[in-house]
Image 1 (cartoon, rainbow, N blue to C red):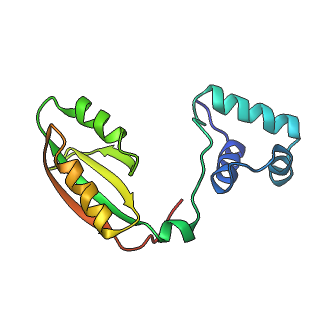
Image 2 (spheres, rainbow, N blue to C red):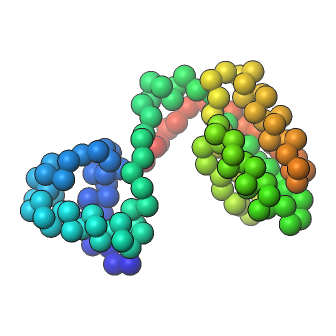
Length: 143
């Protein structure tokens, strides 16, 4: 994949607002609309742009209780545990990591009691040996 500086600028604009019209992107990038459309299609075809997603407002997200759940899994349980975690809609991201834990799940719930139930549910999954959770107090940088 070859990404140019203009491609990076385009990706930056899309990360701010994925619904920005192509004409507005073109204006901001000082390019023609056709050129921007071609760049978007190329970035999509190359897999650089995988999807366009909804980004929740800070006001909405501030009402959610979010946490990191570090997870240790049994040997050979990665596929099964990943599948079960994928089915839990409150799990917003899942990362494989090195160190004493195998996975880190980012979870969000509307209340502490629901977060508690969610963490218990994760701990009860077949193949999960132990968890350690940390509640996120605030977001200092989000890109």
